[in-house]
Length: 224
Length: 116
Ligand SMILES: Nc1nc2c(ncn2[C@@H]2O[C@H](COP(=O)(O)OP(=O)(O)O)[C@@H](O)[C@H]2O)c(=O)[nH]1
Ligand SMILES: [Mg+2]
Ligand SMILES: [Zn+2]
Image (cartoon, rainbow over all chains, first blue to last red; front, side, top):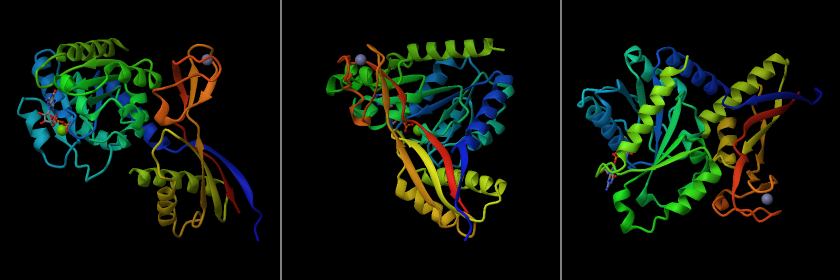
């Protein structure tokens, strides 16, 4: 019988993905293309927000979109119809995107000529939080009908985002959604996060979002 | 939900270390996973059993240490443990302060492994 012994491993489980993600970030740093990872539950408003962003920024920012939300091409076609470069990833029912899949999306876009690429991640608040996509900024949408207790159920997601958009604010008066309770819950998880209130339907607050995004792109492009 | 890709990564790292250390058989793998992660321990073991067939890691037991969610008090800097579902209603056990910052609970780490 061979002797039983212990060996030290001391490695991050997702080290491979972390490395590929770092490669994506560095590559897009070179082309000065800021990558934004947009995450939310299904139906919170990711596609609506992307369409609003295109409508507001298409004359000032060269945008691209990587679509992963659904298998069909519907979302990518909606975006492409606005004259924006879009690529649909075949996620095959996968619950999240990893950095290798994002690389395929980047390869299919003319990133040299783009200022910003937005990823519409798979609609899910659990899995996308665990896998670094290589994005420079992580943005999540929480819509009012989903309730103000989501940070308690999906704390990891709230803890990794740079910006939280509260969408469907037009529903606020019809709901018992408590904005101050939500803010407090989110701030514990992530004191540095920015929280903006929007409605992709009425357009209220969208200006704040596009200003935030434009400012981030400007800062990003200024970096060496 | 994403136990499969995570388990694939675990196996890959385990096999790499087994090869480097001339191991005949891996009997246990010690993992540290933060309580903020939604991974199901049982599924990780099942996928591992499936993926590790015919490798030196076949039959290895995964021992998962769930790392606590720790919060640092904004008032007195004491660190204390919190439950995920109570992160909205924190109270520092030392000074009663209600604000705090998350300092751990997101670990995703392979510590060591038992081999022959
Ligand atoms: N009332 C209201 N509906 C919205 C708003 N934003 C999106 N929706 C609707 O919510 C549904 C899902 O939106 P979509 O953008 O497809 O969500 P996705 O699954 O995250 O991409 C659609 O019917 C949208 O028209 C909003 O601010 N207010
Ligand atoms: Mg969509
Ligand atoms: Zn205290």
